[in-house]
Amino acid sequence: METDFSESEAPEAENTATQPAGDMSTAVQRFSAYLRSSWPWVALVTVIVAVACVLRFWELGQHSLWLDELFSANATASGPFAAIRITAGDTNPPLYYVLQAVIGPFLGRGEWALRAMPALAGVLSTVVIYLAGRDLFDRPTGAWAASLFAVSALGIQYAQEARMYSLLLLFAALALWTFARLVLSPTPLRAAALGVVLAAMA
Image (cartoon, rainbow, N blue to C red; front, side, top):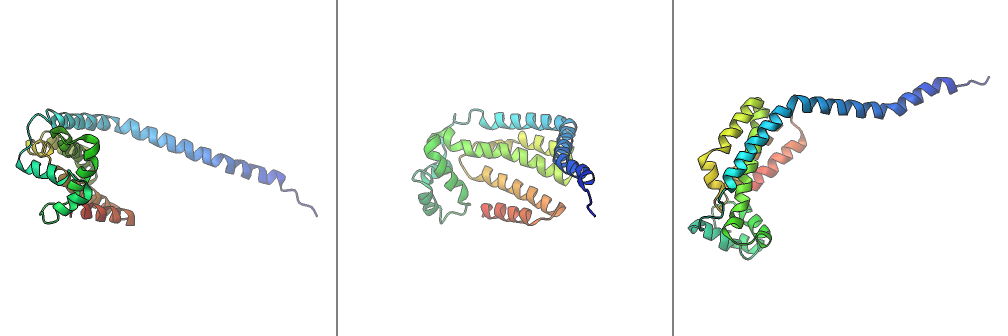
C-alpha cells in the first residue's frame, strides 16, 4: 500500500521555511520597543557624556607639563619596552605608560597629546559609571551618578593630567560594573572579564 505524504508534509515545510523570518520579525519588534522605551535615557546620557567631554578636553594643552607629567613624558618617549623598564621600580601601574608609549608616535609629544588619553578615559568613565548605577540600582541612579562625575572637579583635574590616575579610575569603574553583572547573572565570560579588568589595574 502506497502512502502519500505530500499534503501532510507541505504545511510543515512551509512553517519551517517561515520560522526564521518570524524570529527576525520578533527580534526587530523587540528592538524597536526597546528603543521607544529607552531613547529618553539614551539622549540624557549622551548629553551627560558630551558635558564630560567638553569639560575634560577644554584647554587641555594650555598649561605646561609639571614635574610628574615630565616623568610620564620621559618614561614613554622611547617605546613600550623602554616604558616597562623605566617604570619597573615605580609604585604606579604600568599600563598607562605602555599605552601612552604606543600611541605617542601617532599623537605627538606635546601637552595635548600626553593628556589626551587620560581625558578620554575620564569621558569613558562617565559612561561606565552610568552603566554600573543602572545595573546595580536603576536608570535614574545611573544618570545621577554619571552627572555628578561629569562635573566633578577632582575627576576633571585628574583627566587633564598626563598621569595614570584617570585610566586607573576607568578600570575601577569597569571592575565595579563587571562585578555587578557577574553577581546579577553569573557566567564564565563575565568572570573572565572581571579577571582581565582587575589584572589591568595591577
